[in-house]
Image (cartoon, rainbow, N blue to C red):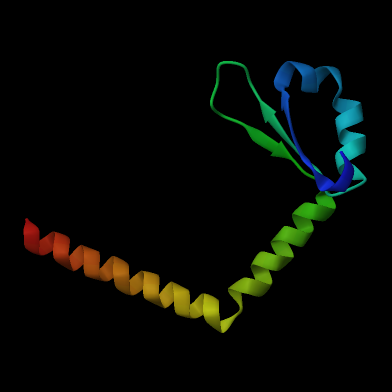
Length: 89
């Protein structure tokens, strides 16, 4: 998985090559989507380092003024929608 590419693997194949998939993901920032034949659900295998990086990014973004402004705007929109819904009933 060069360059952190995204690969999709069926669950059956994943079970047969879990050691190899673990090695490829844990030593880099690649991601592997695990699917199941006949099912829409999927999960993604990522390294612990990538998960921690994503969590840190979310933490930093949530502390920004832009994030707080966006939350306030979404709250205003939701309140407006609730007000409109109560008038239409």
